[in-house]
Image (cartoon, rainbow, N blue to C red; front, side):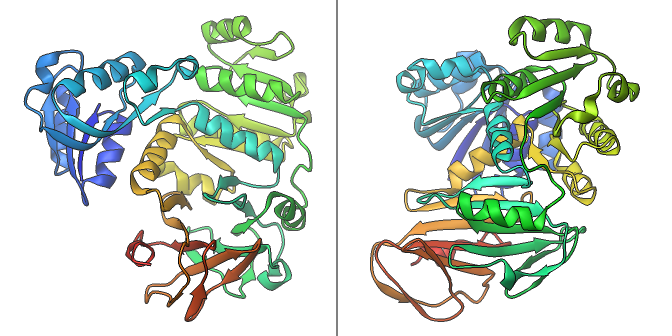
Length: 426
């Protein structure tokens, strides 16, 4: 596919880095330093220019499968989406947007934008899911069904067979070195990350078994950071009638937060490094903490301090993919930050089709492809087979040999290669 990316910053670069091996990528960027870095790192075409300048678009191709605008400025992304139509035929437009108020308008329809991806909303919604399943590390929805894919740090040793049923399956275990074992009657070790698939009600009971020391119910939440992500998160969690405390070192950010947020939310203007706060403000009473800053080092440090003072579930926002393994090895629940969450969301949009949907898990190391079956037929698992499940009549069936799929079945194909040719050819 021909893909045009507007913006060569962190989001645009990481998208290009993943996509350029399979697709023709063009990046528009005005910063010469970023262009030089991209040219040295990736085999893509860079166009130097300001996205607000019409002349920037004159040298572009006449047709692109995707136009993806991911600069740090919402208005530039929207302007570029309007201008590009005068020069190229665009089949799909994906825009990164930070200001959620645009969702209240019809601007997407007017500019023919297929998907406006609200970058702060993605991690906020993921954290909201963790509030409802407090023992889990991560919760993912799966297309066509109410099934969930979740991960949890196991606090016990057990056998997978003792946990599985017709409605719950153990998908994989991940050790401290992020080695993935797709589970087939496997042993679950203490401190391993376990991926399970099932309905909300069934998973809720199993999580209590796997992580008995985690909070059973969330009532009090501590947030480190009062930037745009921290504020949006506080607003959402406050609507769930939770008691929120925010710590922000920057006086201006703390003041702005106090003006924007409900007066019941406690905002403490103090240094993140002041451990005495936990004692003086009785912060250890909180059920979970969420470190939302743009610095992964700060998020790790604050999460470890929270853990030290007795908070059972310290959640880390992960902004840099290189820190994902470190957070995993420290057994810290991880939620992707706005920029990386946007990258993954866009990739899932590009790779998904009307009949096949794709989700990532274990960072970017494993994937699940989901397809609805419309014709009865016999299928054989591929040679490169990790795990294949069929959902039929609300029951999960694992496929290990030739099997007849039926109209209405939902097929889930898990692997680490990212190869989806088998499921495409069904």
